[in-house]
Image 1 (cartoon, rainbow, N blue to C red):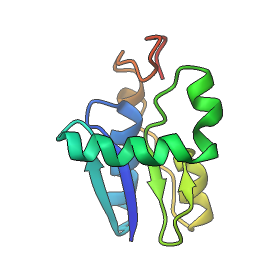
Image 2: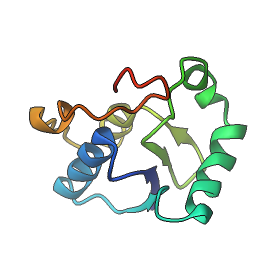
Image 3: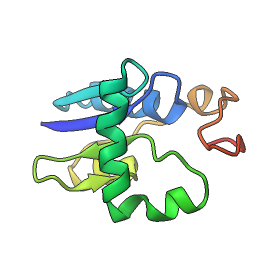
Image 4: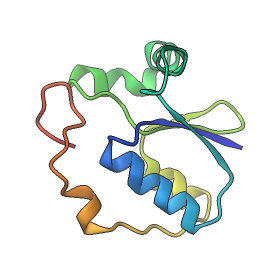
Length: 108
């Protein structure tokens, strides 16, 4: 089962959850804002995985992040869906909510 690290305050995380649900994909969603334990688990992955290096350099948090059964970390959820044979659905209203995902508050 794929583990998804995200937050319900992140519009891309919400859209990913919608996609996973619509595709009946098995996953565990870990909201990093629910507890320090969840945040710590995400930061351990973010600090050690090279896939986050570019994101950190541009002040992006790196959410949502998916960890597959083999331990591979994905930060491009659309690629993950495509590679796993799932259909992508992107509701326009979900991505224009005005919420910021980057540390510099420039948006998602």
